[in-house]
Length: 307
Length: 307
Image (cartoon, rainbow over all chains, first blue to last red; front, top):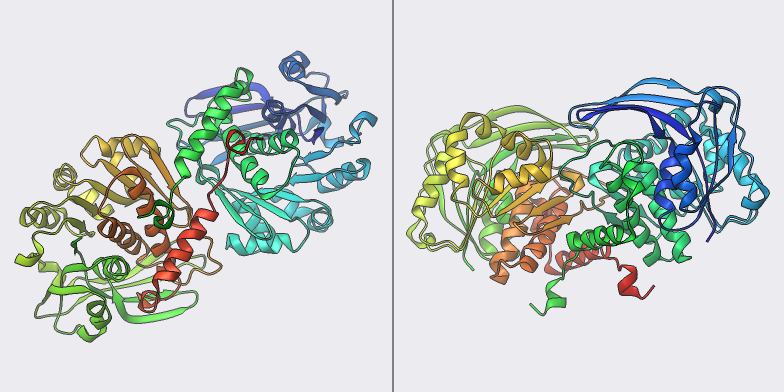
């Protein structure tokens, strides 16, 4: 059940209508690990600068995140600053300082190379490919990407897609990548480039899983208050991959449950700043919310109900 | 199982990226009836001018839509012209000519006043209230509205809300009405003003039913091609109310199925111009799509599956 994540480990300064967090834990690998480690042990590969408050990651280590692959380089950690609109539906990036992340060359520790479940967070597709070349025989490789790589490194991204099993992107990215505004067609376009599975995240509108033979919808969780949307997508990926690593399967029923656990973890992520909500989150709370997702979607047709 | 609809009967001129339809059948009562009549007999109340091609409504009469309440007034029929953006996500109204609709005073025929199921399409809330005063003892009254009335006739609309069981609006209207961008809170705000049930339609993102004790999500149907979105909301209402009239119940399971049949009919509506798709639609096709909605949403949790 070994689950490997490669991605950014950052310090985020986030402003929302509800307040502001300075130099809070952020980055795709951080959010992913905070969520996934509630399902299965996680191996993290990333880089931080010598200014990073490493003890802030103790809570991850304590719950089974192996930080042996977290490189500490001389220089400044990756910092991102952003501000959300009043309705949290859009955000403006105020500052991006790559720091040591600019020269990141992922080195997968020997002990991590047998990982069965791999999540390639949103980094340069050249590095994502490089990671794949260091892994022996993964059972399932999932990756994320973003507009910056779709635009600037399309050829490398296409090479990567041919080698991954699952692409997790948001709706805008799926449209940009495929050049098609229709999500069903966009998903098929992506399928044809490699990934058997395509997960399209739509924020408050939920997420859709396209497999070669089926479509599955997970709704957005109707929270009364979204506090900070940062990291929701990576927490989704953490719940999704964490569940697969835990259950050890990839059949249709497993993938559907993974969509629900992804949605559950994404919904918890936005309840507090940074990874705060994951620090005291319990297995019971996770299962309770998963049952709520079922309550929100279950129905019987007349033929079932004898109507 | 008598189902009454009061609304507009119009002639629409619609441009989409796929073509153009001139003076096609349109209006809320028309779309509602075309969809609902595949579930239960419908009584229609509306007005047309002396230029209306009444024989174009023959297909409705043939499938059990009672047109005794369709007034024919001297003058021009209600005409609407609009153009959709390339991705069909926004539209511009090019022309609205109210014609005889400007002086519409709904007169409910004596034989319609015992209707059990009532849908008040999007017209002036003063007229919607007037209709309610002519009905004897409906089992469930649903209504629609729009930004124009929310802005211009708020007091009358609030008076109406206190008297209806279900409000069907889109997400923008729910936000405008409640003054709250959060849909869960917006639905609660509406509940507190009268309607026990609130259905919020989100177009391609599906629809949400809020009851006092539960939330139910129906996804948007992943069509490869949306041809013309006009009337999807009224077709949704037709499937929703048609199912309730057919099954005769309003418990939680009935309302959930109604959400699915509403979604099914909304998804068929957009496959062709005007009400064209409903003309040859069969009960088997409706049930098949409803089963597809179930396939797209069903999942088991570990505790169910014994995982």
